[in-house]
Image (cartoon, rainbow, N blue to C red; front, top):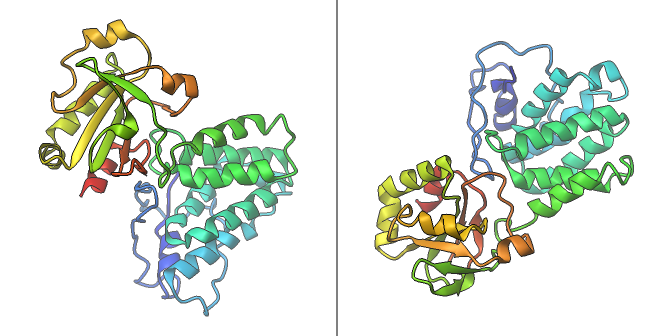
Length: 317
């Protein structure tokens, strides 16, 4: 069982000595709005690397966490393959390492990741393990630590490394291309759609102070559950009723008969739309699972990408 220990986060945030009463768990406020797994009550296992000593000159939590992620792996000699190829050891320490990212300065993330990739690249199997856990925890749906922005840093560092060959970089390059689409702060890719009334318009021409873009499939049970969950939220209903939020539900798989048969499944005060083919033709959006939720601002810039309903509710507050 993979756990995050209270000590890791406490050291990053507290100026108190190790083992003091100040070492209480503090849940990170992450860039991606996700929560780390809850702390374990068990004592630290033998899988934990020793933490580097933090210079006393680093006084703020951000400075201390930034130093920790830069030096977290200093205690790991990746050439000692009985350690670097130990999947349980790497996984536990990788999760502890990631738990520090929300507390560190954003500018420190990429240099720290590049330092790890460079160190792990001394052994191809160890590097493969690191990238496996980066994908598992930062990119796979359902991970409580999912954060595409962090994952992009790992992909970029891996692709820039001279150690993997070009064949080994094919899949990471594909994942990076997808991850870079419609990132928070970017203008969402435009596409045309047809509404239930037969009118055709485009995403960028859709009015709204904010726009909830929901990609769904009429046959998807989870999609129907998510629609019901969103429709039941009082805050979301208020924003829709007041005109402050537009909800655009888009079916993009091209089966017009299925879409037409499903009329009435989407709330009448939402826009129920059929993609005219641009999304698939241009590979504009990556939808690893249905439904896929985006939140856009008035300028159609992405505020939240492929977010959970819970994260959507947070962003709408």
